[in-house]
Length: 85
Image (cartoon, rainbow, N blue to C red; front, side, top):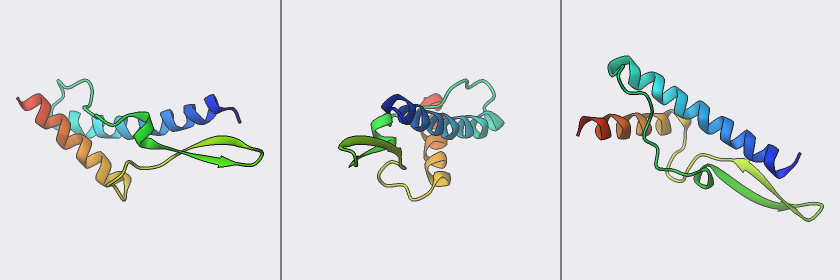
């Protein structure tokens, strides 16, 4: 798997999380079309130096989150707070 394929895998998982958050937000605020997530792809990924001497990228939850559900709740809260201003 190339570095781009690993990056694609991480990006797809981040899109799934943000999509789930958007779905929850739109239940109460259908006018909102996107979520506010200030975390970058680097926050969602880790790098491992492994055999045969190259970096491998993988998905991880951002620091401070133990589950996807808590992360989704935080994104939903940030989004609603942002659009309520």
